Amino acid sequence: MTEEKLWNANFIKVCISNFLIKFSFTLIVPLLPLYLSETFGASKDTIGLVLAGYTVMAILVRPFSGYIVDSFPRKTVMIICNFVFFSLFAGYLFASSLTLFAIVRTLHGAPFGAVTVANSTMAIDVVPASRRGEAISYYGLSNNVATALGPVLAIVVLKACGGNFNSLFLLSLLISLCSLVLDSTIKADKKILPPVNKVLSLDRFFLLKGFRQAINICAFAFSYGIISTYVAIYCKEELGISGGTGAFFLLFAVGLMISRITGARTLKRNLVSRNAAIGILVSLAGYLLFAAVHKNFAFYAAAFIIGLGNGHMYPAFQTMFVNLAEHNQRGTANSSMLTSWDAGTGLGVLVGGMLSEFMGYHAAFYFAFGINLLGTLFFYCCTRSHFEKNKLR
Image (cartoon, rainbow, N blue to C red; front, side):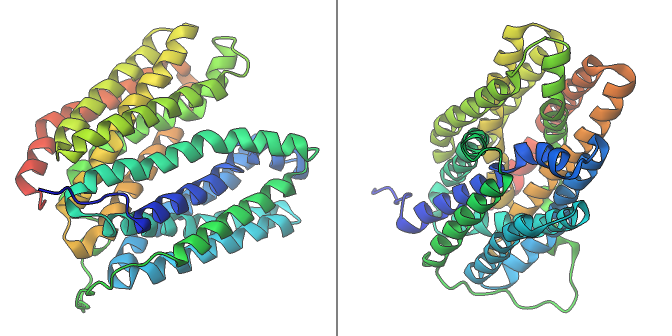
């Protein structure tokens, strides 16, 4: 029997477009605190407040994005969302005050939240159902590559342009324009839209069948939120490593890339639960190493191990969400996954900050491990069996 083709022209375009969207985003994110401090003299708490608006807006928009993607032609929704995402980059160039910048930044979270749902749903639409899990893994790889390369290029560009942040904003604007143009060339099949229900149910905005998966993702994202946010301060103040943050996230990204490539083979055989189980246990070991061993080698090794685990786990859980959903709920499935991750990360940042302030970083990192352990137990006791009983594909 001939294997159905995965790397068709449309899937390649969607992956490249997603890379460009994520790249334009990560190009400016790491340096925004520096920009706000140098340009507007913003304090640390003000910087946190300004940047938090983006994430909050993305979380608020994503459930509605899933409903819109499922209810209207997906390519049209994708292009409109991408156009708004592209347009708002120009706002950074003209924001002459901290208030204006905060408004633009917060508004920018809405199209980002929407376009990520639309693009990921389109990626699922243009691949054969038999290779969907594998496709999700490779699609996510474009995120990882962008996340790894974005901060590096940002520093190079900023240095080459004499510290002119507008050069970064302009470059992000141009990169997002390329993504918009590429999306417009995708040839999507016309889907039969579901009949319009007079009464909207909660299941149109959040995939209720994926509630167990959502609990798991929140728990794992919570742990990541604590580690990723406070790793820079921890490695400087506790370990005395200068410039260790970049190496930490680079090793994390390398782990993600390796496991996504190797994990795609398992997903190709439709062993979704197995992939998730492996990723969860590997990540758990990484968090324990990070929390328990306060040495330089453990710091870097934990980054790589957590990356390996997340690279197996994340695409497997996304495949679970999609395989629990009807065709006309794919957008809702994707938005549910992304919303759960964002919510967990946000809670991790909040709780981790309070624990670090009153009990120290070690308490926060052990708490991250504890929540991860609870998520692991919940997966093996509840989530895994529920998925195997209720999956549609």
